[in-house]
Image 1 (tube, helix red, strand yellow):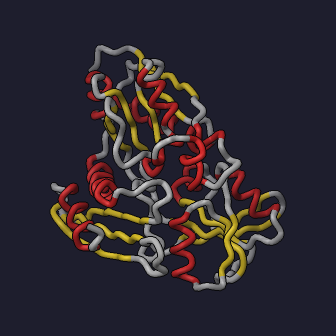
Image 2 (cartoon, one colour):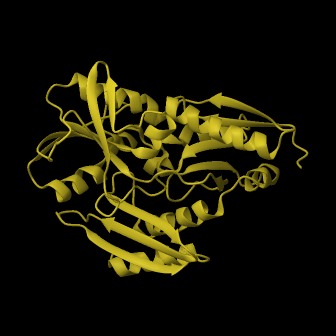
Image 3 (cartoon, one colour):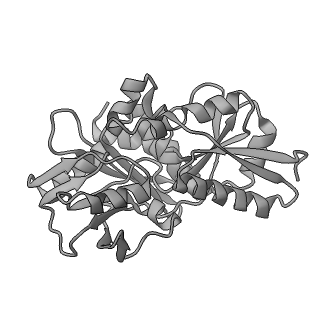
Length: 311
């Protein structure tokens, strides 16, 4: 039980962000039926600046790291307008600003990237649209140098529509978790009258972004009551994986434009972490796979960093 009667959760305004906020609200309602949960939509720098590539938004906006998607939410937390900020964890900087804490995460959804094409047998030649530097480099490694790239921004439905609208585009890559949460994932689908084909990409080749598939909940470090409430809905396995991945990212000193993939998963009591990093000027990534005690995820993140030779 909690003495708090109302909890205000802040979220971005995209369809996916709203769906994730509603997931949090539903879990809170089950765990704390007496608690009133309200939702407040907050527009972030990353939502507004769709005029430049994703990797350049922080630089042109003067926002540190991936704070482009959370800065305004943290401001609302600091001002007390909201109690909880709900994020796609892959949008959250590897180190939070002082005064904030990642209080809980929901169970992890699918981690795969999904290839979406106009033709069912697309073989990796032509034009692939993506705003992710990580996906571009992994695609080049996977399919070879015959690929051309176009920048792609916008929410999930917008990205699908852009694939249909651009006659010179052959494919896009999106996260499976987002497609599933919006009810859009299918082997075959129709968008604006055009049939599209979806297939998951192998995690070994397209290592996900840190935190991909995880919904995270941030609150003020000083707000112990809210932190305790969120602890009641926290998923320990997902949190352990997130901690291992984020520890690696901190040690690497990565920013939003760093082409790095990190994926941790539990196999029994053992935690397995796979990491791949493209250093400047290199066409092939540094890669490693490490295993360790699931009770010490931060140690596994440090081990992966040491094994990768990035230090």
